[in-house]
Image (tube, rainbow, N blue to C red; front, side, top):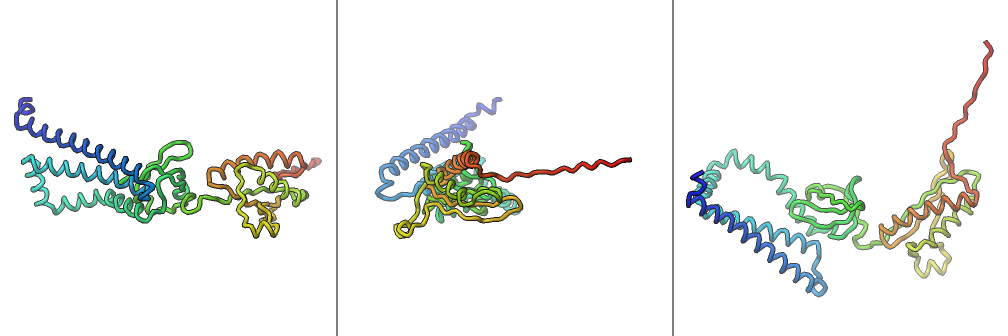
Length: 284
């Protein structure tokens, strides 16, 4: 207990505490200054939001690493320990290198993501087959995605760098939605197609992507084709455009509901599995 109140120990604690507090203040101040500069200059300088976020995180990392280096240089015991560690760097270097391999990989992949930009902050992406949502931030270690349940998915940058990314926002946000419906073989195909086309074009999220030449030639705004003659169904597919994937999802939900109600009313059948059971009576 007496060692805790030793003047030397107190001095070292003050150095550590002061250094970390100052580093925190400097980091916070730099982030505020950079944010204000970004808000004022984003339009004129065309600063990319993704690179700006990554730069802010990098600045904070550098400031705290500088503070830790300063602490080691001011405390002789820590300095001696660091020298000893570096002197016996054989096994330790291998251990530290192995332990930091993943962290270093995350940093490198984070830099690649920011430089090559397969996605940006606020892009709507799908990562592999599991996760999808809006990119909120790219840090030195991980990427934060807000999914459509308003939950945050935190994925290491090394994983993001190795996964297949489907970006629904980059370059062109418009999306072609596939609306697939199976009808019975005795249903009127032409009537079913026309009903789907009318419902799709009437939806508020529908986007007409035809050129003036295609409109003049009478090309339908919604293309519908028979894509399969299955065992019990004729499968129709409609290609319906929307301004973005969010509106496309809403359109698909609405259209499937409207198609079901309209087809029921117009006597267009939907195939469903049926089973015929034969009961044979045998006299014994």
